[in-house]
Length: 421
Image 1: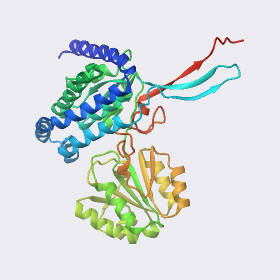
Image 2: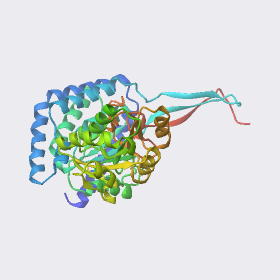
Image 3: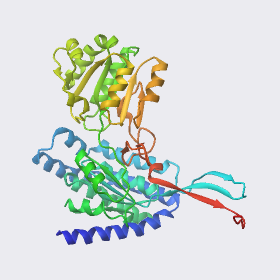
């Protein structure tokens, strides 16, 4: 497509999405739930076709030199397709936030004032690699009464098209507008520039991908953006931690999956427990192929660690690399997190309730955990059904963004002929 064609193409998508959003805003809960169930069934029925499409993307990705972490994000298998379907069914089982009324109260004038939860309207989602986002985003936006425009990365184009076809077929079969979920078919990056400027059609943008994509969207968008830039997540092992718990949590937080934003990138260990916990942890990391980069104190305990640089403390590796630092205690650990962290997810392992409470109160991240792996920072694990993304901003949503984060509130007023004196 030439530039004028892309502009016209994106404008048409926007017009259709805006029209569909009005229908979605008044769609009944039962109809939305039936559509979600149909979407889940369609993914399961078309699993073989989805895997064939994904194989094309993986083959091209290997030719293009994508690293293992990116290929892992891109890959579909039967378990991941089943998880997409399960996520859609869980969304269907969740309460519908649209139309919920809260805080109704009488005012001295006699009127009643409250708030009603309403859809955002049209949600634009720009994402890279992970094809499961196509199903997750479509399902969440649908249940929250929104229309969505999906622009996936070129590396997943065949997978995304196959999933989107399942979604649209289910919408049509359920009696909802197929234009409630539209996939941008062109891989031309100019389409992203058009999408983030269409404020007359798009109410909010959600970028999911690398730092470059998110910075570009944040810089160019003419509408609000729900985002996080980095996932520099920490686990702090306190000197009052249970040793077995500490090893289990810290190992899982790094190795369960490398290419995710909630994977631990820096391990902080209290000096009082470092000699007990670092050698067994290092042995397990070594077996898993994880490269360790440590401070001088950590390297004195585990000599085969590489030397950590200043840049290592602020790096989101998305790879089997882990920075390790020995700290004096809780205060130094929290200071490190404040200085180098990304406000995404941070965890403490401790049996000291007072220290756990301090960590929960004083670490200003979107998810803060006690004695649990950072890998739990996920919409599905939090009971949201799935997530549209994770926000480290403080407005309008924070942490994993599920149904409630895809709605807003308006004031409603009930009177009986009341007039203001």
